[in-house]
Image 1 (cartoon, one colour):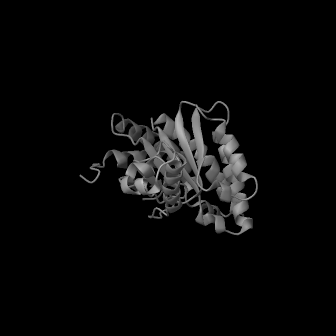
Image 2: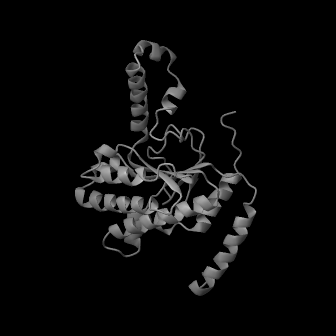
Image 3: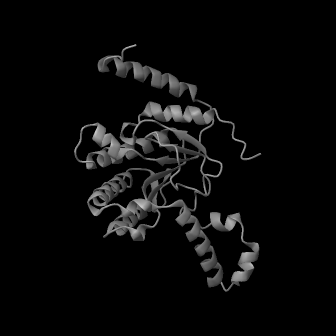
Length: 260
């Protein structure tokens, strides 16, 4: 069957989207969603752009839209994987524009009038120039907002986060006059969970990755122990509301047993 022309496709998709949304009423929703915003450069190349920054810009704009969908769906917490610690090794001419777009995106989602409490998590001090300060100042202004909780993972690595959590637990114990050997004897899961980058994200319900790739790439390794995964074939800038609703439908149909 030939594809419908664009002027017919959009109304048909709108009807389908409304029906899909109606089927989700009363079904389980994830409380914490992790989203891997993958495929920006590939989208730009396939769209005919010679400058991959166009993909970064389109991807950054989609972040704000996506958070609006999540807030409307009643999701409480979102973690956005925007830059891994491995990505920091990219050439400066490629890394610089990406970080600029991340800064612009964070400024947008932390703007006055948005009821989102935003945190930047990861190895921020590894970022070049003044980027860490820009991100920290922008997100600090959202402290105490009562709406959607948003963690922006920048310079983030799941293995590094676990190592940092262990270090932080021991530093806290020693600073309080405790014996390191005593902490070793009783060290447990909660000691790591309490010292993760985000204090409200010790577990994740649902992880979505765009671009068709099917791997975690170090994202939320500790928190995703029992997370449901959803892979989407489209690139992040092309991710639609209907794709989001389909992801929620997929989640609602899972039987979550948490290893039991």
